[in-house]
Length: 293
Image (cartoon, rainbow, N blue to C red):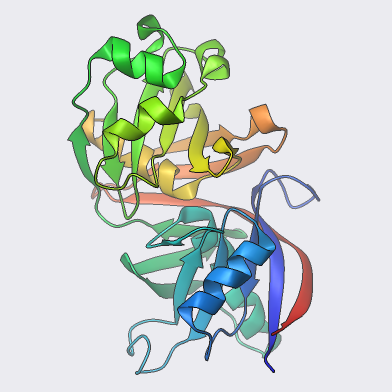
C-alpha cells in the first residue's frame, strides 16, 4: 500500500485574495516508486487539465544541477512541458522547503523538455522558457477560418506554429469580439497537426493594448474541443510569436485568459533584453490531502 501526499493549487490567480479563479493543478509531493501507468491513472482520477509528480533531486534522477524532476500528465497523456504546472509546482516545492526552514527564491526543474529555471519575485513565480521554434502554417486563410469557426477578416496576421516545449498554433485576431466567436472544429483543425494528431491545440490572441492581450486556448478531449482557463506554455509561445514579429525587447505584457469560461487568469509575459521569454503569475494553495493506492 502506498500513501501519497498531494496539494491542490490555483495558478495565475488575479490576486492573493482571489479564493477561486486561476487554473487548478494537483501536485503529488513525492512520486518516487510510482510507475508511469500509475501516474497516468492518478492524473485521470484528479481529472484536472494537468497533474504533476515531483521526484526529489538526486544524481539518479536529475543530476546535481536541478532541484527536482517533474513529470506532467493530463488525464490522457504525458506532456514534456506546460506552463501552469511549472509555476504551481515551483510554488509547492518552495512551500515544502520553507516548512523545513529553508528560504527558496530560485529553482531549476528537470522536465522532459529540458531544464527550466524558475524564480520568485514579489510573490510571483516566473519561469524562463526554452528558446522557441516556429514554422508557418500551410493553409489557405479561408480554410483556417473555417476550422476556427471565424471569418478570414477576423485574422490580424499570419497564424504560426510555435513551441517552447509544446507546439501550439498561435492565431492572431483583430478584436475581442472576434475572440468571443472562436469555436474551433476538431475535425478540421486536426488536419494541421499530422505529426501529433491527438494533441491539436489552438491559441487565439487579441491585442487589446500595446502591453496587454486577451486570449483563448482550445485543446481536444473525448467530448470534442475544451477551453483551458490559463495556459502558461501558450503564453510563452506568444512570446516566441512576438519575437518572430520583431517585437522590441525588453518588453512586459499582461495576458488575461479564462473570461469566457468564468475563470479569469492573469499571466505576466516578458521579453528580456537578450530575447528570452519569461512567464509567471500568482499561485494560491486551496487544499491538501493523501491518496492511498
